[in-house]
Structures are given as structure tokens and as C-alpha cells.
Amino acid sequence: MRMICGSRPVVALALLLCVALGGCEKKKVTKSNFDQIQIGTPFPDVEKLLGGPGERTGTRVIGELRGGKPLTAQTYRWKNGGATIELEFSQGKVSKKSSSGM
Image (tube, rainbow, N blue to C red; front, side, top):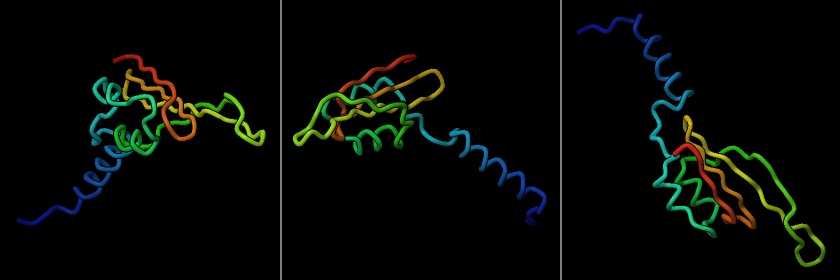
């Protein structure tokens, strides 16, 4: 059977939209995955569980390290539709967690 060349651009566009909109990706922002994240979970483990680095939404100074260097915490957000997971990391590990819309 011969393939019609005119369908290639349609298939390519569909694949592009699927990837761009996240429609082909498994939904990882779930209550089950949120419950697996514990205080002290390393950032790379969270990225693996939630499917990427998330969106960095802020940084704040939470203390001081030896030598006067500031200790900071970074906040990241992962979203899927109305579901949101927000995590704060200090020294590369989860120090606070919250969720909404699940």
C-alpha cells in the first residue's frame, strides 16, 4: 500500500502539539506522587518522580552558614491542570511541601 505524502505534515504537526502541550506525557502531578515525597527527599529524586525540574518560583534567605554565607531555600512548582505541587528545597533537599487541587 502506498503512503500519501500529504499526511506526513499532519502527523508531524500532531506529534509536535502532543509534545508541546504535554498531552503524550504521563501525568505525574498526583496525590500519590505527592505522598511519596518526604521532608529530606533530594531534588534529583523529586525531578525523577514528577517528570522534570518544575518551575522555580522563588528564593529566600532562611539562615546563615558557617563563615557568614547565607543559607537559602528555593521554591519550585509542578502543575498539571488544576493540580499543583509546591516544594521548598534547602541544601538540595525538601524542607516544606504543599499541594492543591488534588
